[in-house]
Image 1 (cartoon, rainbow over the protein chains, first blue to last red):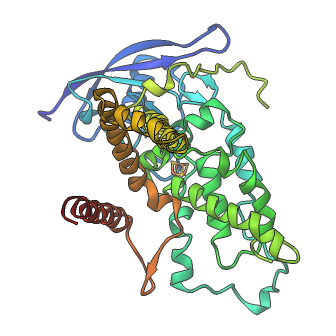
Image 2: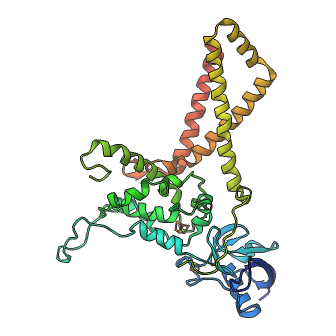
Image 3: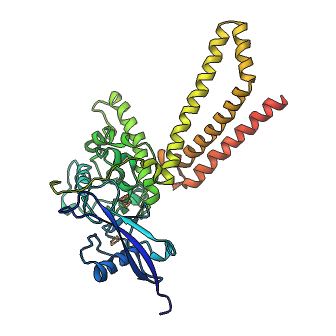
Length: 251
Length: 130
Ligand code: SF4
Ligand code: FES
């Protein structure tokens, strides 16, 4: 056990019962090659201050609940390592652009409502009975949406999006990526139900292609691509409605 | 259910907080230079319509150090603007498929730069040689 170094972790604290605004508090934490930022926070909670509040679950970049700002960059704290910041220090804040509930925990309600609004499930005009078997799809058809289905709802992309920070009416990167994931699925027939949201100011047109969302995404979803390809779809939808009897892309 | 006593952080100075946002704001700023260039071209057309004297005055302005400096600035802004958009353009277009396979983003970006360099060289040759 030769490798036992220490690093300073500065954490944003906010107690909704007593504080009018957040403040920073510094802890000194031992670490080695394998200590993740999340483990650093757990060390603080277990040994230094049991009241420190933050979310986590899987510790392996799957559940999407441990997102934090680490030195100003949105990161999954279980996928970032303390050694990468040594000999400097870390400044850990709750995910940007979300209201702080307590310490590092943010209120995700707004995102959850947006996620529901994009109808992230397969919509069929008519469900086929179970007896007829599953809906088939070729590998090529699957490739059209697969990357967008990797989203773990970690919200890093929302913290990377100044448009969402400035006006949270914007549906935002992950919800629009998931909308696209279903629109691009050959088994889905719900495009016309989702297009009004795509077309609105709160939909893809709220995006000015800052592009940082795609850089911070830990799952290579590339939300900026999902959003901006739908600007093309939205434009097509607009013109097609004059040309087709019932209007819209999939009629 | 946002009745909890939550704290919302202010957005003041957000564009200074991260190098990505600085680069984004610079990209947006280049639009001002491009608009200035369009304005200059328009001034030329107006001068032309007003007769030979006005046009000669416009040409004189073009040759002035002020105009040359401005053109250099606008050229740099235009190159930066093109560079930023070329880099993100694969995100803004539907995926291109060749023989059933998706063309990688990098190939799209590089071919845009190559195409641009090609046009630039042809124009230099035309201006110089022919
Ligand atoms: S798109 Fe990427 S960054 Fe955004 S919530 Fe999904 S996994 Fe996280
Ligand atoms: S704890 Fe699950 S993604 Fe980090």
